[in-house]
Image (cartoon, rainbow, N blue to C red; front, top):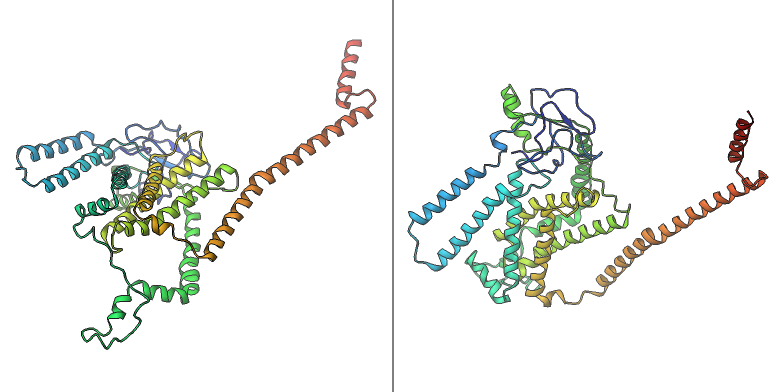
Length: 449
């Protein structure tokens, strides 16, 4: 069932109700995300709260086979598969193989449960089950990291052999600055072995990057890309998103467009972080930046301490994992920070991303404390100290000294206004304000009449 998208027919959600019915051609491209809800229940039409920065959305509430949870179907298929393995398949007499297969089967059963029963997050496209799947993968990955954390350094590295027999071997040291001979006459087999050994894909990229970064990187790629991206975001934020069920669209062209638009977001939300608006938001944004940078740093340290070569597929899978869970976690953090009364607790995916990042860093600290405790060059230490001092100084000035000064000025202004009113009353002769004296005079006239 479509999470948070079921609505009564003919009712619109958004800043204003949409009187115009959607055209039969399908939907329009959508923006960032969808309203929060449960895949088993849906809020009544017109009751969902939407920010002023969220676009208008019309949904006819069609509940098709594609959007249902299929809990009984998944349970039946899972039970049949387990019954087949138990009753019809002969169990091999290999302890290591049976252990691996049992662990994989346990993970698959947990994923099936989570995909059908877990709570939905803020995203619903292309399907809520897709994001529930990555939520369950996050749980499995965090449990794996906890297991590695509680092992010795040797056992943890050797455990990686159960995933890939080629792992668990110390990475070879590559000497980039030792023998710099381009042509080595002593090596008759390959006199250019130094060139081939040191020339990888990063060398030409870095070489060209240093000299062409202002042309290719700043002006063309980043500059032009940022400009086009901002124009696109501005155009998408003004659109009204109208969604119809596939079977309610009469034309085949409209059905194809609707299928393609299913892979676009449900609605558009403009993020307004406003980090300097309050101390809470400032600390939250700084914390987000810190966790983001720590996760990026863990990419390099984790593969180093677990003896995984950079080209190993596990390194790529981890990056794919963070691409999928990072966006959901960022949206949940924004909801928690922007509207704490409605979102009273941190989202589940954001909680797991933070826990995973911290656990990865603890593994790095435990497995290789020597590298982390190496002294930094003096000029780098100076830069870090200067940056920290500047940030702390600005924070104290912005949220303490400046606020105290503004409050003091406001109090002085109110006191001056109070003195002015008091002096005005005294000049009136009776110690009362002119307005109050006029009211008393009117009351006396009424009594005489």
